Length: 95
View (cartoon, one colour):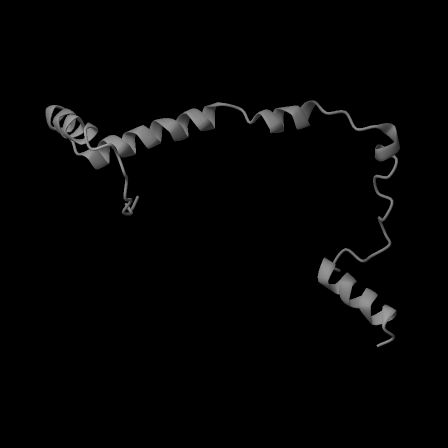
């Protein structure tokens, strides 16, 4: 994957320690940061999204469920929102 530049700001006292650590590990600071970000991304992927989990267990009230499909057949399947808006405005303003 292609890399892109990123500017980081860190405390002045920390930089020599980071450079020394990278030198001991025979790597660059960029590689260290990339590895850290990769770990964060992997952790995020492995943890389920709490909102999504809540939505999966959410029960829909009967009153709302009764509205399912109420508009089915009212508009052709190939008509999109912009077409519906156009038709509405055309009727409203008598165009």
